[in-house]
Image (tube, rainbow, N blue to C red; front, top):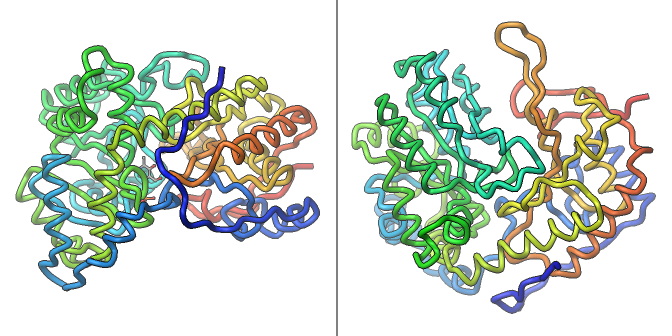
Length: 459
Ligand SMILES: Cc1ncc(COP(=O)(O)O)c(C=O)c1O
């Protein structure tokens, strides 16, 4: 039984969307080199490319913009954000950054040396890219259930502790400048990590004197899953759970474009004051002064308000149930997805739906293109386009285990009717999936190639 949650808000501003004809869609996707990043947003009807920075701000956030302090240094808006940071995450030292990858760049610049390894459950694309850009090696050690789309395990984002310890012993902690965990696990289906696992991962890193960092852009959704699913947390508030989570970490970064409900923003926080000093130096060089970090004062205000709204439990209930509605309706139509549905997105299992397209011909890309042509829906491939890379020793291309299409849900933007339309489109694509063919890449840059690659149909 699929239940759509009642939105805990009403709508007082709208933005028109239009559905262009099939013929126009065919022309648009061809012109875009079959890369949906290259489409004009106006040519899309339902845009699920990302949940990052695409949410609707609240009246309180729009109001907060008006009181932004635009002083270059020591702005009031910075101190308001510092107070929120302290109250939610408990970090004394933090810098604002313009978005998540700016924080990742700074962490990598000050901590990663050539040949270093950074383990995580699963790094996301920009994290991987920033580590590789410093000649480091990102390593993914998620539990096996996290790579099995059908597993019903409730914390499929968990790190495999045995694999982690084995990896640390083989690599040596001198070559691991920090260890990470991503909550929720975006590259693996938006699946949550349990507090028990975070505690064990923290203890493991600390046993080997490795600083522990959390990629926390969807921390609120993760904490809400802990409340719903983990024994002993049902009566705790999401704020209390967040306190427990972040008390275990030596540092964290966040793309505030997700659970802080803003269109731009991020932060990087640490406990070590010497590390903080290095971070400030790097920040000043590339982003801006320490009290604004590449943002306007008004952005800091919207972030302070959004961080509190992002942990509101009525909002989180609606958010998680909305995603579950979409996932369950797709399942009812026989469309394979990563089960159970995650926090911010539904991930179509393109590898299972299109077994006749090998990973080298990008089944996920074939599916995103088909969804666009059928119904002007934009999703994103999360498979070999995004993550295949040459093995550093053999130079043979290593493909990721899963070939996925992520339908990421912007926060507070779409309604049940939009999702019902989307399900109809996906059903039609699935009914004709045997007729879909693969793609080859005609252009690709070295790092983060999915953003600008070009494709052509095979055959
Ligand atoms: C898990 C994770 N980490 C980091 C980032 C990077 O954040 P940003 O897009 O703000 O640079 C993202 C963005 O999608 C993400 O999902």
